[in-house]
Length: 101
Image (cartoon, rainbow, N blue to C red; front, side, top):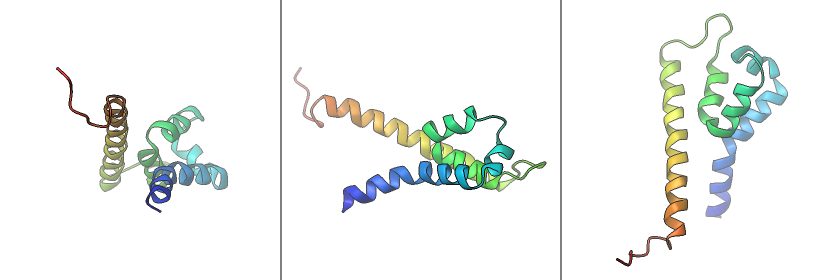
């Protein structure tokens, strides 16, 4: 059950952004010019990109607290990337086994 929850928690922002992109492509088109930036956001910074698309107001952009939440989501995405990279390197060493000097 815990693994299933972790999979859905990890996939949700990407899935949500993908669904918004399919159902309401004008929201994504208004927030970004072209398709490359939302695609890169979908891959590397899904929470920040999702919040940017949701908060973006055409002609105004993001103001005030909206920027705070997008930056906060970007920090969460960055933390997730760093933690997973650290976990991979630590797992290659033997799941935290003591080093042999």
